[in-house]
Image 1: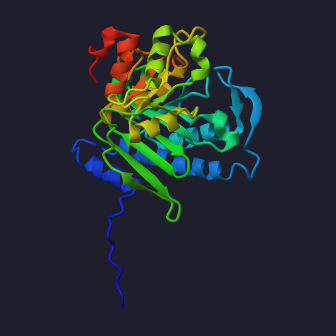
Image 2 (image 1 turned 90 degrees about the horizontal axis):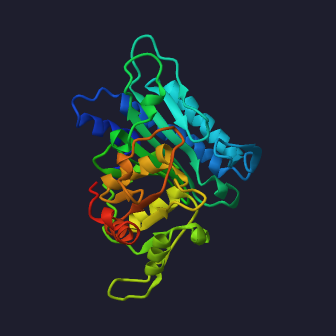
Image 3 (image 1 turned 120 degrees about the vertical axis):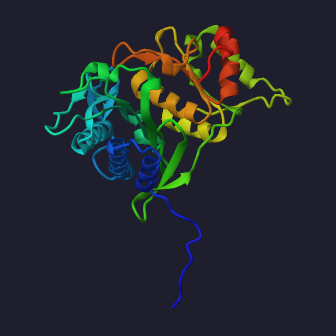
Length: 346
């Protein structure tokens, strides 16, 4: 009989979450269960993304979301699936989604209080759906501030530093689930042969320096002069400083962020003349990504203050964001707002 030696231990997402839970004796399992259910939901979304060209879920519904943006059919499917799985998980008190005008409170069970609420962007980069470019899901999990009954808006309107976990799923050439509970950032790649997310990128650290800048330069004439000055600096040749930097912009925050997390770089979506408060959503995009990047050793600011310190005033609040490698973000701030360049500490 021939025995095949297993050279590498395979750690699944579920096993990793349980192992992480054991490191905290006071943990009672609700957060672990919630994370595992988000991972399961991602598998369902991934299945539909992969067959989107074969069935009638591509294209537009003809409707718009709360931001006036065209809603894609796959957006609706993803939103419905996450809400369904989060409600049936039993540990989630409610969800606030980029696709819905207000939060959804789930009926509380009679035997216990649900401890957590979830903020989610079900399908980031949906304008890329029809052209087969990577898209993703972004989520953030907060512990409730209310103690009983149905969740309330105050449970969601918390600054990002109060997140207990955050992550994203990128649906690309491979599908990855990346998350942190505030200590380390770990990435899991979906193995379609066994249907499991397997640990592939343990203890991710964003390089302190990078050579990539990500910004939509078609909006150049809407940016402040200081932003354009930094972009021009990125383009100027300087062998000693490793410039020019490489320009990479996909149009999906998950995709641009993921590349920069691995390779080092800065992603920027600044304020514009027609969007003075920025365009990306604080609760659904900026806070979860800032929580991840700080856990990975990077930095995130709105140009004036740390993203995670912003106190949200409403669910669909927007914010400018500069996020990525610490030294690149600091360098950008030397151009954009010198007072914040050395004054912010993650």
